[in-house]
Image (cartoon, rainbow, N blue to C red; front, side, top):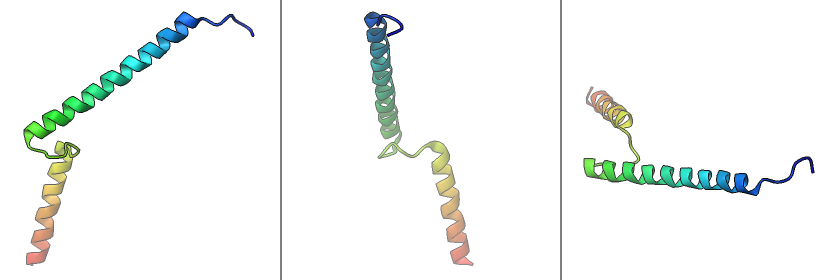
Length: 66
């Protein structure tokens, strides 16, 4: 073994990683709540995707009517 293990440093790294995962999870949950409050039922579709979906739907109906 080249160096003596630094258990305090290893523990601090694990705690930082754990806190980061908790923050990411909290952020995902808050985004889901915001999306549901905005009227998006599943919270997975972003604004850009919804605009693309709307334009695709319009072009499909236009081609069907022609």
